[in-house]
Structures are given as C-alpha cells and as structure tokens.
Image (cartoon, rainbow, N blue to C red; front, top):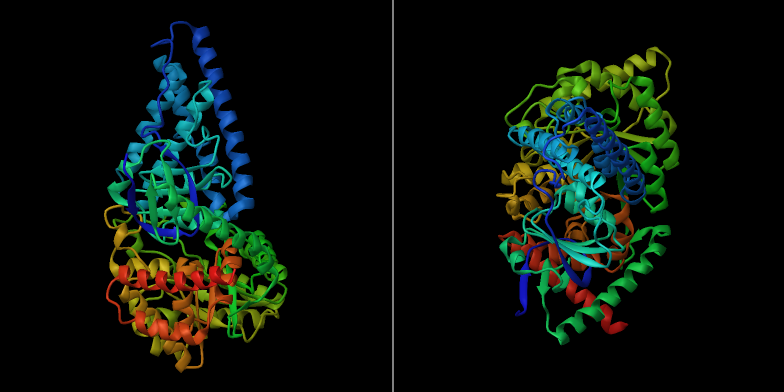
Length: 589
C-alpha cells in the first residue's frame, strides 16, 4: 500500500516509529461463547456462580494493582479513574444483578455479564449528562475485564500487546489511557478527541507521544503497518518511504537523548535563555501528590483540586479532616506557595451524598462557587480549614467559576467573616493570606480590569475558559475539533487578563492544560504569564523548553501570533518557531 499522511492535533510531543496496533474495544463489555445455552442442574448453577465470584475477585485484584501502578506513574487524581472502577464492582445495582441472572435465568456467567453490562451501560449512555456517559465507558471496561477473567485465552483491552506498538483507535477512554504501559505503547493516534481532553492530559503525564482528532484518515491504517508519529506536529505517516523513516529515526534518537537528560532539570530552577526566573508550580489532587511535585522540582502548588478529597469520601469531610489534608500539603511544600481552590463540585464531578439536582447542562449550571454561595455551611467549613492551614505554610486560596464581581464580593465577604470567627476563637492563621479567583468564564476575563483592583491574583483555567469561549464541549466528538486553547479569541482573553493584573501590580498564573504544553511556552512567556502550574510530570520538560527561550524573541512572537485569525495558523506559527529552535540545536550538536 502507498504512503499515507494523516494530520491531527498533537497533544503529547515526541517522535516514535513502531508497528500499528488497531485497538477496537468491546462495545457491549465483550462476549464470550459458552458451551451451554442454559444451566440445567443446581450443581451447574453453583459451579457458574463460583466462576463468576472468582472472576470478580480476580478483576478486583487486577484493578487494585493497576491503581497502585497508575498512582506512581500519573498521581492519585488520575489513578482515581481505576479506583472508581473498583468501587463499581461493589455497586448493588451492578454485580449482584449478574449473579441473579445466573441463579434466576439459569444463564452461563459470560452471558450474564454481557447482558447486565449492556443494560447498565446503555442506561447511562442515554442520560443527558457527560459524567454519567463517562461512567458507561467504565462499565463496559469492567465487563470486558470480567469476561477475560472468566475465559482462559480471552484478553481484556490492551493486555494482548507484547511488543512496542503505536495504537490506532477510534478513541481512547481515560480508563484505557491510564493503563497504557509506555514501554510497550510508545504512541497513539485516534480518530476523535480534543487537545485538552482527559486522555490528552494522561498521555502527557505518561510521556506517550499522541495525536488525536485525526478523522477518517486512521481508517486507512492496517495492523502491522509501519507508522511514524510526530506528537508535536500532530502528524502520522503510515508506510513511510525508507529514506523518510531513517530521517525520523535520527530525530527520534535525538529527542530520546534530550528526554533522558530531562531528569537533571528536576533539581534546577526554571530559567530562560536570557536569565529570567520563571515560577513553575504543580497541579495536585491530594496532599500525597505534593511530595511528587517536590521531587519533580515544583516551585509550589498552583492548584490544589480539593474536590478529590470530597469525591473519595463516603460523606462530607469535616473541618478537621480538611485541615489535616491542607496542613500536610503545606508542610510537604516547606514554605513554597500552596494555592488551594475551594471545591469545584458539579459539572462532571458529582457527590452522591450531596444530592445535587440533575441538570440538562451541568457545566453551565449549579457548580463550584455557585454551590458554595448557596450552601454557605460547606464553604465556611472549607475556608476555616484553609485559613487554619495557612498558619503552617505559604497557603493561598482561590474561588472557582466566578462570573461577576457580585459573586467575588460575596465569597470574599464570607472569608472575612470566617477570619473574624477564628480571631475570636484565638485560632492562628495568616492575616496576609493572598486571595484570588479562577478565570474560567469570558465575562470575568473581559472585566479583569475591575477585578484586578480587588483580588490578589488571577489563575487562568484554560480548560473551562476554552469551553465557554467557543461553546464546545471537549467530550463531544462532533465539536471537539473546535475546542482549542490556541483559538485567537482565547488568546485575546488571556492577554487581557495578564495586562489587567500587571497594570494593578498583581500577578497572573495559569493552571489549565495549556500551561503544561511546550508548544505554548514561547507564546505564554511572550504574553508575560507570571506563574505556570501543570501536572508534575510535565515540569522537567517545561524547564528544558524555557531554558532555550529568550523573552525578547517571545514577545515579538506573541505580537505576531495575536494578529492571526485561526487556531491552525497559531499552531503552525508556534511549530515553525520550535522547529527553527530545534534545527539550530541539532546543528550545534
């Protein structure tokens, strides 16, 4: 077959050459043929129930091992995807129904599993709720794993890979991606997907080169085809010519040499080529992840996603439990800044015990600070814990999902009242603790000049800012191609916020996916971003990228990019800039 060039969105850099592995996950949890159509004796029923219970135990053991492995590789927050699957095995609305079908319908265990998985997953997929649709993918994944445990020789998902491959798939769920072994799966390309999806974030954390949103071009790739994958360029070449493959092989070796030298950057500060110090922080979901951030050389925590403390609990954590978690993070960071975001519940993050109302469009509904301002008891408890923790380190707090000054002032007023309560109780806290807001909604970015006179800092959350600016759900495959933080409108809003903060002698950070993207680094440096917060695994790569950038050149680049009118043009300008830098580096080598 002829050479084929496939263009998509590069979400995790790196050049890789390997054989294609076509991945087609089961759509209904999988099916396994059974030697009998129906069980005809009590003994047969008992034997089938025994097989099913053993399969459940084996499945649970596999998920626990994978969770531990994923926690070490990508952190507790991302590994929570697998921990959530483990919990589903104990859901009374799931596994017990399988046993019931064996016992009451006399069905063999594999058929009972496939039937219940199909029913439950279909029910969730029919809901008008992105979070529940994601749970459907988890249900099907568990079903496939259960069937693999039930049938010798039947493999689950990606367990059949034995050599280095580049995955080719319609899509990869986060629960698929978090299980990838970078020693075997060196890259992947998908037909659907967006630049800031959870799958893209996980690929960067794992160090797997990835291209998503490649469209129907992936259908021309066959199992075993030689593929060249360029994650930075968003390019995949199927069946390359030998001379072309050799050129990419040399580039891949140079890139791997660069990657191996990244470990040294963990112990260094982030400094640009012209000697400017850049503050690089880490996003964390628990106090335990603060330790990993320190090992990776983080200057602090730019985002403590406190909602995971709530999502991993069976009931609302009280003040003491929250205080201990925040205090521990502050202790581990040893005087480095720790920015704690008040809980961002709602949207795609549900708390069963909080019983939030079902909504047609939860991302635009009752979530984050909107919940806190209605349920003041929850917000006050959390603020008491944060303030008390501030006595043990450089703790800061920020409010998410602020859309206008009235919300900010109401939240700030509650914080002021809580501070007064702690003074009366003689409980110590940092009287000068900085208080900021997330910039996730275009209205806040537009009004940044007004906010700048009242807040201590801004933190731009590009993941939601993009979603609300271009009106595109990143989880919707039909519009995911519109979801791009290089959209010119998004860039204009980022510039507005940074300029407004600097005019008021305040600072602006960024904690969305864009902050951890090396392709975006020269643009953000040129725009004057003060603090960058990302997944801990991205820190060394970003330090290495910044070490090759000159602020003057980046300011000129930013001026040119802000005149461009499409995301594609912006990406190309940044690729050209990076390629010029790389070519110069290769010439020097």
